[in-house]
Every structure is written in structure tokens, then in C-alpha cells.
Image (cartoon, rainbow, N blue to C red):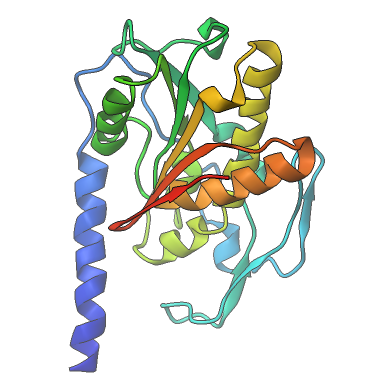
Length: 242
């Protein structure tokens, strides 16, 4: 009975993974999302990250310890994949032309902007992020889609993902994505004259976790405090206002 209770959520997770992987948008002129791992085997699978790591651009990251790893490995720890920090991309779409990807440089002064950060397993052009972006454009001039697909769905062996294993490894990356997205927000505030009250941050699943790290990093490093943040974690919708 206990084994059945364990296998059932694993099977459901696997089916959800197949659904998300196959459900791609085909009606938008967007660059193809996703990145492939260069290493044939994810080294963190066998070599735990037990000490904090330092990145000259984004600072220090403590390891995340998994006391109950759901496979036949001892308890391990992993760190954010800073080696892949350049795989985080930002795609801007405008209310005037929502089927075209624009450069952040096209965002004009006084624009109302919403950042949307997708969740685990997804990519920026998955159905839910695109649907959410279309809804957000009804009340915003621009939506910036944060694409962290490479870090949100960590490969284990070459291009192969193992349900739960890749999800656990991906849990280490929202803090990195949050800090990277904070710098993007800072760029728009400094270079494009965007006002902080005109920025809405929205995150889904792992993207919702990213919001907390984003807000903390912006506050501590740049003294930026956001007025509007919305995070959706599983079936719970939380609204944050600071």
C-alpha cells in the first residue's frame, strides 16, 4: 500500500512533465525557448555542492541541502548553476504588437510594465506564460517574459530529465534568477526612466519563489522596494505589497 502511494505521485508528475514538454505555442513569432546542457552528465548528481559558491557579478550562494532525496542516493546538497547564468533571457512584448518579440531598448519612458516569471519544467513560450502575458497586456503597455528554462528544468543525463530528481536540482536556481532579474529591473529604472510604481512582478510556481529572492536582492543591494508583486504557488494565490 505504501509503495503504491509513492508510485502514484511519481507517475502523475511524469505525465505532467510529458504534457508540459509537448504543449508548445505555435501561433507566435517568438524565438524558440530552452537550452541544452553541455555536460553529458549533470555533475551535481554525483558531486554535491557542500560549500558556498561565489560569482563576481551576483555574489555568494549557499548550498541547498536535500535531507530526503527521493532516489537511491545519500542526502546531498546542490548550488545554483551560475555557470549557466547567461541562459536567463528577457523577451519583451508590447500591447501594440503582442505577437512580436521586442528588445528591452524599445520600452519607452512612462510605460507600465509587468514581468512574468514562468515555473518549473515550463519555458517562456509555454501555454500558461503566453496566456498570462496576453491577460497582463490588457492593463500594461509591456510584458517582459523571463526565460529561465535551462535552469527551471535541469537535465540529469545529457538531454534526459528524471522526474523529481531534476525538480530537486532546479530548486537551487530561483535565487540566481531572482538576482539576474533584479538587475534587469534596475536597468529599466536607470536607463529608461521607468517608475517603480509602474512595475508589476508576477511569478508562477518556481517563478513565485523567484520573486522573494528578487525583492530581497533589490532591497539589499539597490534599496529598491516593489509596490506590486503577485505569486501563484500551486493552487494558492498570494498577493504581496511592500
